Length: 101
Image (cartoon, rainbow, N blue to C red; front, side):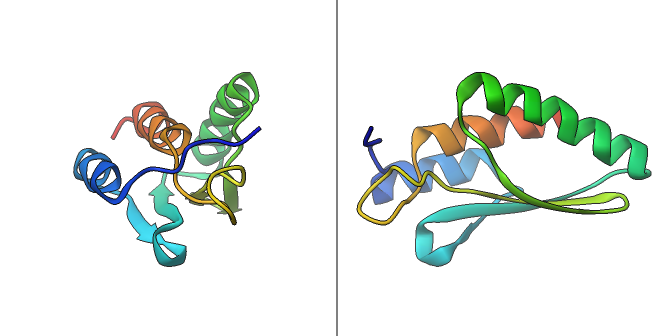
């Protein structure tokens, strides 16, 4: 099922509200690095996000080393080759809330 890709103006509005996220992949994704006190806190965050992602059928690309979680969000069903959608913006806001930032 195709998902609408954010327009350039929508992307700019969302990025203003997602101050810790940066554009990546030529505007087709957003990225953020989260840092936690230790591995347990990082893994707990990933677990909470995994439950949310499964519920919304929108899964992050991520990488974890000890207390760091590097996240990329993109919607593979948006646009011709994937791109940013409202799903990504909403997931980013939810991840920020779960991380307490």
